[in-house]
Amino acid sequence: MKKLIGGMAVLLAVGSTMAWADSNPNGLWKTYDLKGNAIDIIKITASGNQLNSRIVKVLPTSGYKDGDRCDKCTGSFKDKPIVGLPGVWGLTKNGDTWEGGKVLDFRTGKIYKCYMKFQGNKAQMTGYVGVPMLGKTVTWDKVG
Image (cartoon, rainbow, N blue to C red; front, side, top):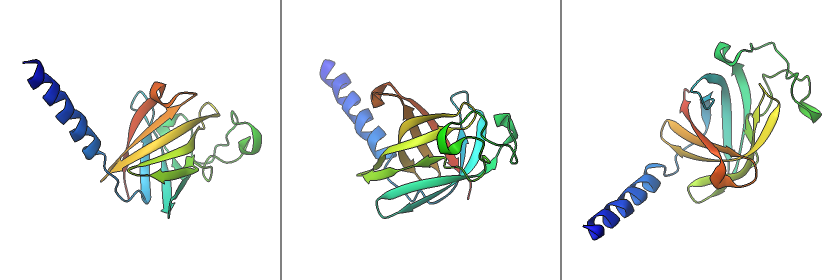
């Protein structure tokens, strides 16, 4: 019985890894927060081994609108229009994962480290501070 359960666990782990195999990340993506609220639409551009994005639309469920500025941001993002700011940036391809990047939460002004995986019309973005395994993961939807 232990061998059967162990074998099933291995199959589930392999299936989970295979399910998030790399696909084309280029395009428009609807992002969500940890509560499932839609935040914005970002345009992801992956070229070679680099992935970056820009916010192209702020969604009402974020509590902000397109003309608003990032009043909680710091540094070069402070008081800049939210539309046009980077959503995720600086990610580098490593196998089926894009890693080493950052993600901006314009609602709090916080910037987190992140990594991403893509499968068809879904993306998993994990944001974290410090250790990646302690991060939080959200699923985004491709919308164009």
